[in-house]
Image (tube, rainbow, N blue to C red):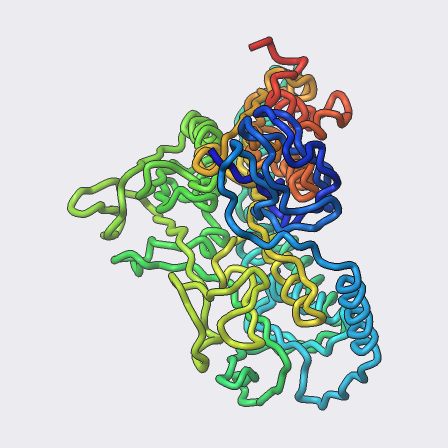
Length: 571
């Protein structure tokens, strides 16, 4: 039977590979698993094995040729098999040199172009939104020599600095401190009074001081990079230019739309006085005796732990059958069990359809009553698009991997495109958009290497595919290592949790990593770097991790993929 030999996609970023040399020649007999050629990518050299036994009937691509991934480079089969007609002519050397010369000429032309002098109301780039996606875009564009302006109708820093990442993590540090105090007795620390209370007014004041410091810092950074600031709402016109709320018209070469997202009270009865959103929850001056949270995503579970630790009786209602769907189910279940043990009640598989005062309903069924009801839903803020026709899908602006929208010279970054509602992914999107506008040499956005974290106690860190998703696409191997066998975790007094590594069984590519336990939000960045660098499991096992450290658990889980972890019992 005729079998194709293809240039493998040996990594999420790989687009082409070069044939270093053929180990076998046309007409040679080969056995399944036998090495037949060596290839090279920009990251690694690989030996390619024959998938089937037979004769190497035809080599289509010769030594030294660069070939796109998933391209047929040879055929293995039986004598007499018919080979499909195909062109295997390599590119002639003189053609390659001609292309190189043309490329050089273009670069020289570009460098010699004189930059057009812009008037006061003209900009190379206009950015709408001063959150992580917006201010990062603006500064990156300014660093590349462009004249940039930014409009923000609220506080700089967006949801992240003002109403999300920073405020919640400030409160969650209190949670960790409380939990560590509770566990201190087993470490020999004796507290005379075990009663721990939270002064919410003082915690609120401290939280607001951190927010103020960071938001002021963003404005300073923009000004230091000569980005002109407009503190008002801006709208994109049908011609791609800008109209400010004040009526001022601005001309711009490109627009980066970074409008962010906002809280959505989208349930019947959500206008009741005891119903709040996450913005309002972070400004509460008193701790509610009972709190019902609608939504068990990462925002919901973080809020649940904050108020449970502060003293509220918390119930979380989720319409799906599990929490935090983008996290590996084995990992998220460990967190949910921990929260349940601390007193948080979870109700799964119930969709809230109405709120009647303190009563929350699912259809005609009463689920719970609560002093305060917190809605965690968010929706894209598309205010700036009222004057322009742009492609929208499921409430998000449709963009490609270079952040380009359906409208020429309009880019959409951050929450507004719905790819990933995280600040650091917004940073990357902003960088891509700015680079694409500047010289067309931006990276492609790759969601699979963007790490995410849930800052509960225990923490969760995640990057890439979950085990369930990976199984649908690859033949996989899984490695695990429990913190209970990690010396640093034991010394720390917190040995609950685990590291889980998912890899492609064939090429050893790390497809995903999921961590629950101490320092998970920091540790996951290490695996993300490995994935971005396309380090294989085999290569990672050769590395040396410091001892004793939490990060050793990553190394041990990677080693367990191949069954060679020294600190795990033999399987």
